[in-house]
Image (cartoon, rainbow, N blue to C red; front, side, top):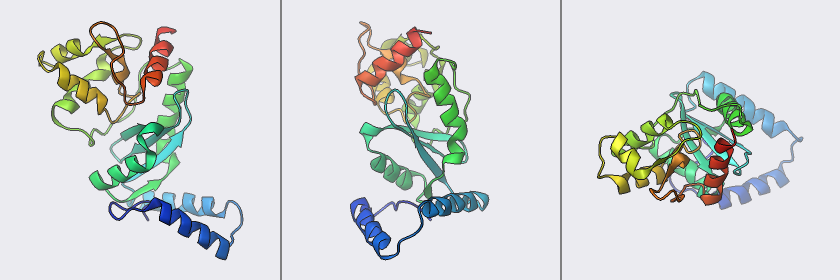
Length: 214
């Protein structure tokens, strides 16, 4: 059922094989999409779909969204490599990964509202399975930084009760598995400069500019 396998992954070979099959066994346009939709629905009904994903277009480029039964587990920028992200999800959560857009409908809608400037906070169940320890503590704190506001890495370290862990806060932001929704883009250096960002500095600037304009 899975689109990917946690080991022995060879997407290029799989795509070549898929092209050969398509040439040998031609099918009507849309048939594969219909079959895939039915497969996703049946897998979901029988509890066989552990990670559903879809991609959406946004002002900061395409985003991959992935969710477990608990909630949104991953938001990824294209620069991270979607195939790599899916492979990591298969290894760390479950190989039962399938493109199933419907599970992500609510997420896609809220992200669209966010970029339209009509949503200032996300109301989504989140699954922090891709992080742990101090990193997860920091990431769980980040949504408390209000829309349009920023804090320094130092301030975040103080607010999570470990004022000396400034560098660790930077690492937690850099490895945030849920960017945009968990707003690590609101964390800046003490001098007000951007610091780093998993989606690139252009994306971080776009997000901060969007929020300042509200």
